[in-house]
Image (cartoon, rainbow, N blue to C red; front, side):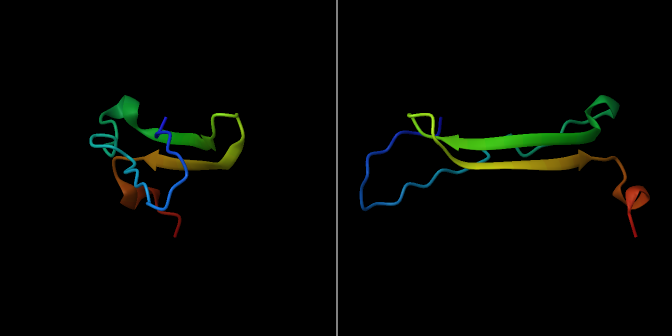
Length: 67
């Protein structure tokens, strides 16, 4: 939940990700390919925005280049 704000003339900023969410796991078990999905849903259950993403955690990016 990001917050519940009534309609108004002021802009509400939400900083995402919060502190500490921007560090990848370390070690062999943390490496690999990850997928995620975000949805922005209002209180009535209506989906206003939905997107999927993927990323990889690698030890050495030079050896995995697709050049």
